[in-house]
Each structure stands twice: as C-alpha cells, then as structure tokens.
Image 1 (cartoon, rainbow, N blue to C red):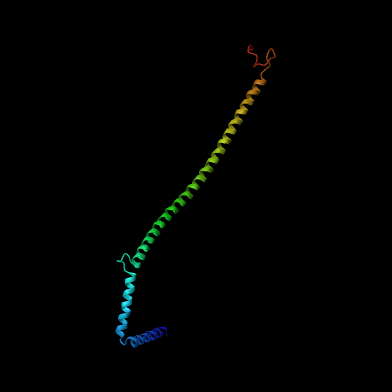
Image 2: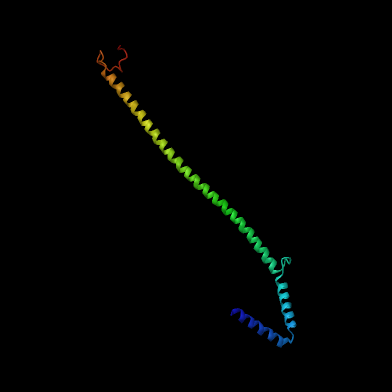
Length: 145
C-alpha cells in the first residue's frame, strides 16, 4: 500500500512537471542540474576546501585520536592492575614482617627469662655460701679467702 502511495505521488509530480515545462526531459535536466550544483557545493574527497573533504578529514582525525586514547586507557588499566598487585604484595610482606617482629620479640623475651633465671641462680648460690669469717660482705672484703 505504501509503495502504491509513493508511486502515486511520483506520478503526480511527473504530471505537474509536464504541465509546467511541457517536456519531461526539461524537468529531469533541471533536477540533475540542481543535484550537480549541490554536489559542487558539498565537494568530494579531492576538494580540500569543500565541506565534505573537511568533514572527512575531521572524522579521520577524531578516529586517530580515539585510537590513541584507547591505547592510553589500556596502558592506564595495566598500571592500575600492576598497582593492585603490588599493594597486595606489600600487604603480604607487612604481615610477614609483623610475624617476624612477634617471633623476634618472643625470642628476646625468652632469652631475657633465661638470663634472669641464670642471674637468680647465681644470686642464690652467692647467698647460700657460708657467711664470711669476719661477718662482712664478701664482695666488699678483698682480703678473705
């Protein structure tokens, strides 16, 4: 139905053109002349100063810029992924460091306990020795033997 309606409008236009120009060829030539003028105004790929070529050049430039931006975005995405990987590695290393710190602290505490016990034993041994002949402190008396 739509095709028939379009053909009907085209037929009306042809009849109107024939009535005005009395020749269908004159109307076709006039239409072709208008189309050529419009094409000249728009230009072609070879006409540097015409709108079509300028739009085409701008389009190509924008495509190149888009490709460059896509490459940069991919590069930034790699940096973000690398940063995340390094942050995870840092967190793991910090946990290992904290464990090592606790182990060293525990070892030092144990070492200190051993030293304190040894000092306590020495102090007990010293205090368990018989009293000095003169009754004075054995540390202060340098003549006792």
